[in-house]
Image 1 (spheres, rainbow, N blue to C red):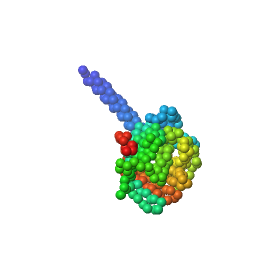
Image 2 (cartoon, rainbow, N blue to C red):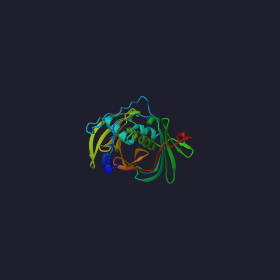
Image 3 (cartoon, rainbow, N blue to C red):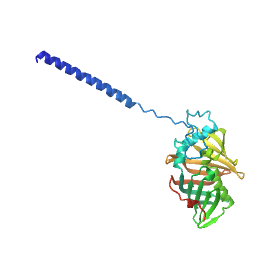
Image 4 (tube, rainbow, N blue to C red):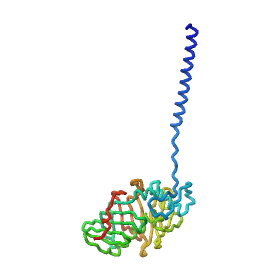
Length: 295
C-alpha cells in the first residue's frame, strides 16, 4: 500500500471516530435531559374509592375528576375525608388495615365535682360491618381500681375481675357517646346508614373549616369541623341530655398507612372533662373473641 492509500485510510478512520463521538454526545445529552425532568406524580383525587370488605349493598363511586373545593356536595366532602384517613386509598385501606385495633394510652378526666382522675387505658376493637356490629372493649386502670366496659352483640356491660355488672348510667352514656359520636360516625357513614348535610363554612383561629352534619338512623346528629386544606377533622360537636359536647383532635400522624389523631380533648358545656393521649396503637393483630365476653 502506497503513501496516498495509507493517508486515505487514515482520513476515513478519523472521520468515523469523530462521527462516533458526535453520536455518543447526542445520546448522553438526550439521556441527561430525560433524567433532569422529574417524573410526573399523579395528584390523588379526593373522591370515593372502591369499597373493600363491607356490606355488599353499599356501592362506591370510582374517582373521575379532582374535587372542586369551592363546590363540594356533602357526600364529596365525606368521601374526601375518608380518602385522606385511608392514606390515599380510602375505605380499601381502612377496611383491610383496621380489622382489629389495639390502642393503649392515658386518660385524664374531671368529674362533675371538679375532681381530676388519671387512668391508663386499653382499647380493643374488632371491626364489624357497621358500628352496631362492632365489638369494643375499653379497660381503665385507676390507682385503686380497674374495670372494663364492653359493647358486643348490641349489648353493653361491665367487667371487674370475674364480676359482670351493669354500668352506672353516666358511665354507660359516656361510653355510648364515645362510640356513636366519634370519628367512625363519619368514616363509616355509609355502612351505618347515616345521612349527610352541609352546614356551611367557618374560620376558627385562622383555619378555614367545612361544617358537615352526620345523622344516624336513630336521629343522633354529630357535626364535624373539617379542614378545607387537609380534609382532616379538627373537631366535632354533639348534644346529649341537653349537654353540648365538643371534641377536638390534635397531633395527627399515620399509623400503618392510616391517619390517627394521637391526642383528643373533650369539652362539656365549655368545660374540659377529658383528655386522651395515645401511647401505642396497632392494627390487624389477632384479638380473641373471649375478650368481648362476660363471665
